[in-house]
Image (cartoon, rainbow, N blue to C red; front, side, top):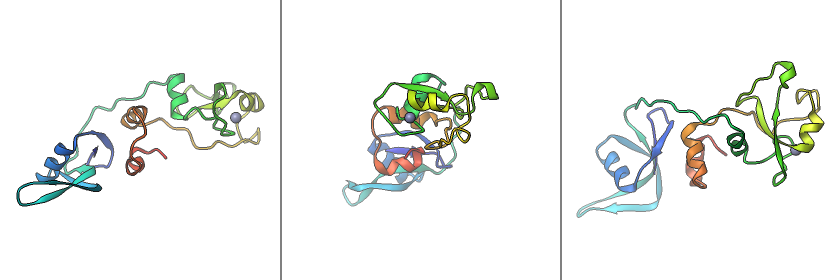
Length: 163
Ligand SMILES: [Zn+2]
């Protein structure tokens, strides 16, 4: 069960039993129900949340995903951000080339196939007549860790900022 902060930022995952208890105690509210799943007590039954949101804001220490080549590749799903090709050797492309002042950063590095990288050369995408599939940005720590464990349920994805 996906746990969201009061701000809707993803915080972690918990077991169904804990999710139900948190909602029952009024410490969290159900954002999405798990399809048709309920827990039963002697006199009653409660829906099991698939996503719950805490009633109080929890302050957490922000951790960040290290900027490394494997992590950049994973963020971009090993897909060339210019032509969409996969399953070919990938390189990292500086969207704004270093010679133009481009930095080594999450929002300036993308996964690109060798063909696109050499076609783009030392130019910004517009100059080369190329377009990025999406604006690169720093991944959210928890969402990044969770997505590495496998494909999260479809209803979680909007809250994890992944498509
Ligand atoms: Zn490409």
